[in-house]
Structures are given as C-alpha cells and as structure tokens.
Length: 272
Image 1 (cartoon, rainbow, N blue to C red):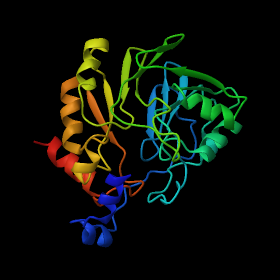
Image 2: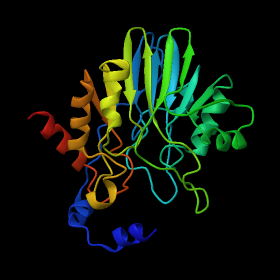
Image 3: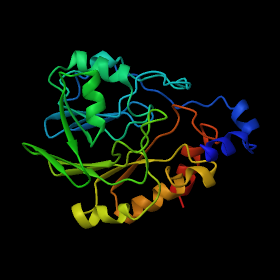
C-alpha cells in the first residue's frame, strides 16, 4: 500500500503528454464468427482474445466493458453475443482487468457448455458466482488435454488480489496452448524473469507469443509485475518465438505512460 501511495503522489513526467493525447488503437469491427472456419486468433483489446485452435473455441481473460474506477478507452471490436460455442474460458489471474464478473456472466449465459481453466483458488471465486460452471483448477505446470488440444498453466511473476483481505490467495500464471501442430504462449501479466527461458526448454520455441507491453511506467513500481516493450522483445527472443503479438495496451489507462507509448516503443524497438 505504501508503494501505491508513493506512486500516486509522485509527479508523472508524461502527465501533460497523457492529457493531450487523442490516440486510440484502430478497431476493425467483427460482425460474426461465420468466417472462423479454421485456426484463428482475434484480439479484443487489453489481454482479451478469442482463439479457435484444433477445433476448440477458447476465450482468454474476457473484459467487454469498463472495470472498477477505470473506463474502457477503445471500442470492443465485436458484440460479445457472437462468441458462442466456447469450449474453454482461460483466466490468468484475479485482477479486475483480467477477471470481470459481468463479462464472464454474459459468456456463461451464451455458453452453458463452457469449462473454466484457471489457477488454484481463482476457480473457487468464479464457482461462487456461477455454481453451474465446470471448473478445472491448476498449479503451475499442470496440463489439460482435450483430444488434440493441450493447455498448460505456467509460471508468471505477478500477484493476486481483489480486496483488502485476499492478497495472494489465488494463483496467477501464463498459458501454453498446443494443437494442430501450432503452439501459442500467453503471458498473462508478468514481470521479466527466468520463466521465459523455460518455455523453449519445455515445449520448443512457440509459434506465437502473446506478450504484455503496457502499464509499465514508472519502472521502479511496475517492473516486478509488468514487462516493458523492451523486455517483451527480450522475452520473445529468449523463447525464440515465431511471431510476437503485443497485448495489455491501448484499452485501459493503468499507469504513467500515455496510451500510444507502448505500441510505438515496441514497434520502434522491433525494427532495430
């Protein structure tokens, strides 16, 4: 709590730039999933994705609207009701910008068959909201297999908390998905640490790496829990990822940098 107060009371060198920026990510609206006949990945803003892989439909950390005290800054690129036939809901951790009760409720109503796969403790919270949802909780390195799809819950350097009393009670993490000869790594929220170098040792280089780049300033406060655009590229290089897809930017204002900063820094560094 002391570090949060110190951050909030400290001057932000980019405050004026944040106030004057009008930037928002370009949104291409998706009207239906009719064209999603094969493997595909759709970014819905922040850390939310729809994935179709190995004949299964998967949602990552769905947040369709505002979160407590923070409004959504970019339009959701689809009506949430188009996401039907969802097989698995993956929740990386319990923070409000990753686990949104209203969004999960909407998905659950449209997908009674949907199963939850998440870290230990998070499932108990979601089960208290939606007792009918089938829940699979995992510790790090535990795997779920469904026909040709394999999902592994992996370590991340982060934390969990939804109230003043429940800090550290639920396990956070990342995911590796494998199916149809394709591997996809999803970092969740994480600081830079040795777990990235473990990925190719365990699974080989991922074809795709979904890595956070935003909410990274000031570094003295954010560094343990959020990788920067620079660290994201370093992590991708350590994993020898085929294609790096940045996330965790452009949707919610959660830190000192303006919304345009992370993608611009990432793009500039990636060209070097």
